[in-house]
Amino acid sequence: MGGIVDKKLKGSTLIEVLIAMVIIMIIFAIAMQVFSNVLNTGVSFKKIQVQNQLQLLAQEVKEKGYLEENDRQLDSVNYQLTTTLSEVEGVSKLEIRATQQGKNLGNLKCLFQLKEKHEEN
Image (tube, rainbow, N blue to C red):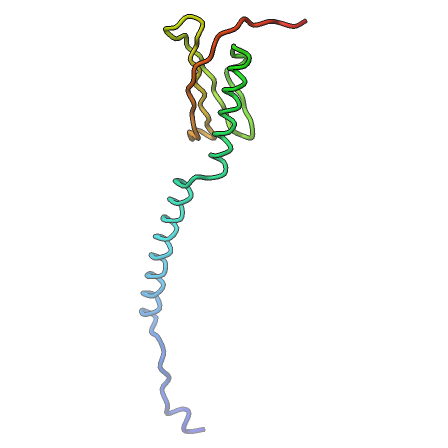
């Protein structure tokens, strides 16, 4: 047993371990920033879904010929629909903006032919 006591074990000092942890934390922080940027700039399923919904809302207004309501909320996305008269008589401009929690998800601009609103009773 006397031979074991005389041998020194090699190991890392506390400073070496702390330096290694700091390096790992810096690399992790950089990786998280890159991952966050990829998620925010990539084409996501939600953006594709919003673009399809914008097309459907525009088609609905074109078919009716008038705007029923200015604001809609579908699947936690707010759609603001605005119309302005164009230079051509009987034609109006439609702009639809999609936002979710203040973040712009997309917008669409198009023209549509104005029609009279028929109320059904």
